[in-house]
Amino acid sequence: MRIKRTKQPSGSVVGYVSDKFNLYVLMESKGTVDLYSFEAESFREMMSTSIPSTVNIHSEPCIDDDCIYIPTDHGSILSLDKFSGEVLATLNLGSMVVISNLFQTKREIITLCGLPLSGKYRKELDKQCISVNDKTSGKKLAQSQIMTGEAFGVSVDDQIYVLNHGWLYQYDLNCELRNKIGLRYNRLYPPIVTDNFIVCASRIGALHIFNKSDLTSHGRMFVERNSSPPIHTGNNILHWFAKDSWKTREDKNDRGGLHRIDLNNLEWHELSKFCGEIETHPVVCDDKIFVGNTKGLILSPVDGDYLQVSDAPMQKICVVGNNLFVASQDKLYQIEVNSD
Image 1 (cartoon, helix red, strand yellow):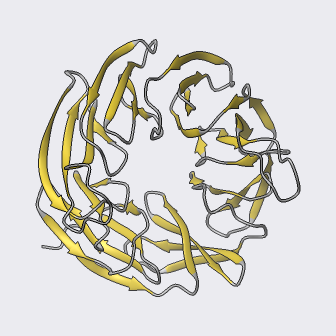
Image 2 (cartoon, one colour):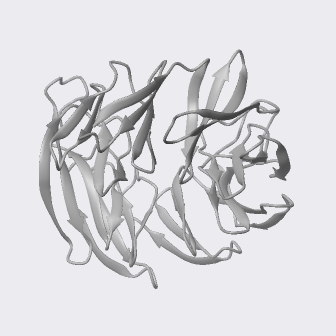
């Protein structure tokens, strides 16, 4: 690995997403948010535009062949042409506010929303529902029943899965409830969808695995206290960065390990150890797993490779082709994975 190029943003980086070729970056400066696109290989700026609304920086946009969809703080989602930055449509959520990342099918945008807005400034978010909107017209196509309690995340494939206050909800894409399963554990990551299973993972290292076909229980596992959400790397295999012990965040010598979890056989083993608490969600690039830690390192634990990127905290790692992109407090880095 090596740092290939570095950019000094004109504002604070508040989010970024990618397609197969380009990186799209949201930057905040003087109370406004601008959208920039960069060609992934050359890191050349291709487009910039100002977003004509207050952006919800806590929910991740999504992107398709033509548009980038950006949630706002005012009950709407903007559809922008990803080449020109022109606003093509506004997806109206009514009195609701986006509280999850955005998901998409070929024709719809799917999100978890908090409702209602109980006042002009105060958001009442202990009630949620799923909203499905048409990408082109912005029209609301479906809305689920109301769920109460703390929501832990959403995942979407041909069904919609929601973790909410000790329950796993399964909806179809028309927001019809198909199943509801009580869970033993709380403080959960968003559900993980694999080829054959739905996995609910808690921050204490417990996993409850359900068969994807009918949500019957496939089994439970207890790995170790973890530092990041598990990542599905194919063939019903998860990789999980777990902590070695119950040490506190202040312990400078805290160690962790990368674990491989086979959901088919309900088996796991540790692949490697490393120092420093995990800062970013793991990603896969060039068939290798990468993660950033609190020491400003990007690690490839299986290979034992690492790169000192920054002394400041890092945001998520984004993959475009064979390049990694990551932002620190005041810089945006392009990292070449194969630098031999």
